Length: 300
Image (tube, rainbow, N blue to C red; front, top):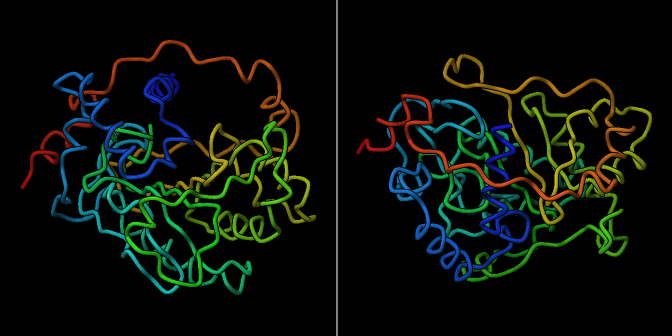
C-alpha cells in the first residue's frame, strides 16, 4: 500500500512516462512547482538538493521506494556502447554493482541483440533518496531506466541529451506495441537484461509484456522477471537484487513463478486496471527513511 501511495503522489504531480521525456526547461519548471508545495521536512527536498555523493563504502540502505545510497559512483557520460541522457538532472549515480552491470551488458548487446548501445535515463541521485520528480523508487542505487531508442552511431551533444525524446513503442490505443517502432532487437535486448542473475525485475508497459509473451520461444524462464507497469512505453526499468553482504538493503520477494503471460497479464487490459488511483499520501520525510539516511543526507 505504501508503494501505491507514492505512485499516486507522483501521478498528482504529473510524473510518470511523460515526465521522463521532459527536457531541461520542463524539468526545471516541474521541480520548482514541486518545491513550492513540499513540506519543509520532505525527504525529496533534502535529497534532491544534494549534488555530490556521500563518501564511504558503497551501501544500499533501505528499500527501493524508501531508502538512500552511500558511496555512489556515476556512470560515465560516454562509454563504448552507452550514453547518459538528461545530464542536467544529475541522476546518473548508482551502486557500483549496478554501474558495472550496465557497462557490461551495454558492451555485449551489439553481438547479443544487434543493439548498438544504451541510452541511459535516470538511475539515482548522488545520495539516492526520494526524487523531486518522476519516481517512487530509484532510491538506493539499484534501479535504472533504459530508453527504448537505439543509441545513435555518434556522440550526442549535451543539448541533444537534454532535449531529444525517446521512442514510443506502444500503439496509440495501448493494447499492443506499435509495429512501426517495435523491433525484434527490442525483445533481444530485454531478454539479455532479464537473463542477468543480478536483475530482480524489469518493468515494461503491459503492451510490451504482451508482445514479449507472443514473440518468446520455448525457453521462457526469462519472462518471469519482466513485469507490466503503467508508463514504460518510452523506456524500461531495471531493478537489481540487493548485493551480497548489504545488510541494510531491503529487497523484494521474488516474482511469482511462471512466465506471467496468462490471466495476470490480461488484467492490465481490463477497465479495473484503468481506475484512477486514490488520493496521494503525504510525501516521505527524512524521519520516514532508515535511520542511517538522516546522517547521510547532511554529511559533507
